[in-house]
Length: 151
Image 1 (tube, rainbow, N blue to C red):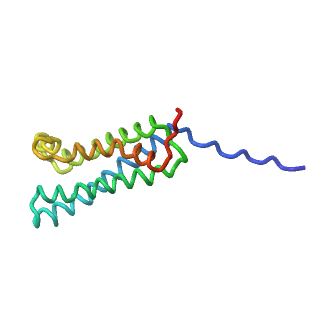
Image 2 (image 1 turned 90 degrees about the vertical axis):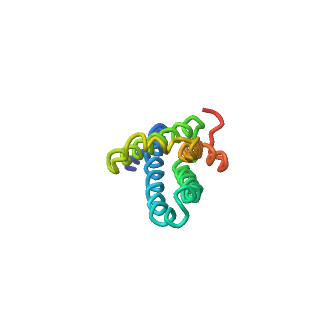
Image 3 (image 1 turned 180 degrees about the vertical axis):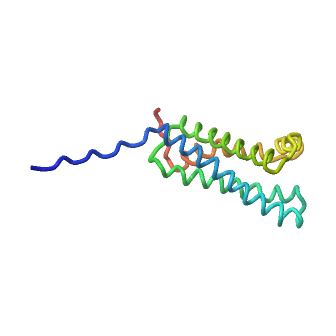
């Protein structure tokens, strides 16, 4: 007699993949920004000035965050457009929570000073980075052909 074969483990529902992607994406973006922010403040700003250092760092951070989205796509063969945008939005919210907590409670930055980093009229790039981060999973999946056309 043949012993019964264990049934294969069912795949994770898409919602769990999305939650995991949100958390990893947000933490990865925070870590990338943290490390490159240290390099910017300690090495680039004294050499180039604060504004030029920020403009130099921005494309590097953005490219690395987009690369993180590209790598996370490999967790599933395909993703729905809704899941990709939820993942991007959740990653942005995770990043904002970590960034805000660090700036306000660890560093002790006054709220008004922290909010200056969002003022595009004064040259802030952070909101543009957040917009790119929001859409990067969807764009990367479109390039890779990993977007489910039907939900």
